[in-house]
Length: 124
Image (cartoon, rainbow, N blue to C red):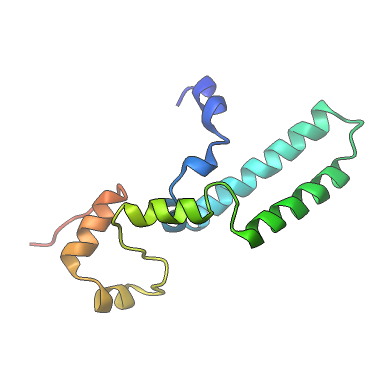
């Protein structure tokens, strides 16, 4: 992706469907945390006279209030409804592959993995 395109879209995390965020798991969390750290570092360099610790505390409090209210953009009720409207399987509740196999048909699982853009190979 060209840098200009990345800069135009890097903060559009609310546009990523909830089910994708969950399926990406640690990779999504790592990306979001790295992005937060990068932006915090940028603000400290670009505005050295701003009390960044106070700003981060205030922002964190606001986020926690939004999270508790279920109104974080990209994670709230509207996002959950959009994810449900995609007719996908929520793989989040399953802790192991065996649990998925017990509760989801292989055809449905294959369809869901393909919908998520994951490679599916079929053993013959």
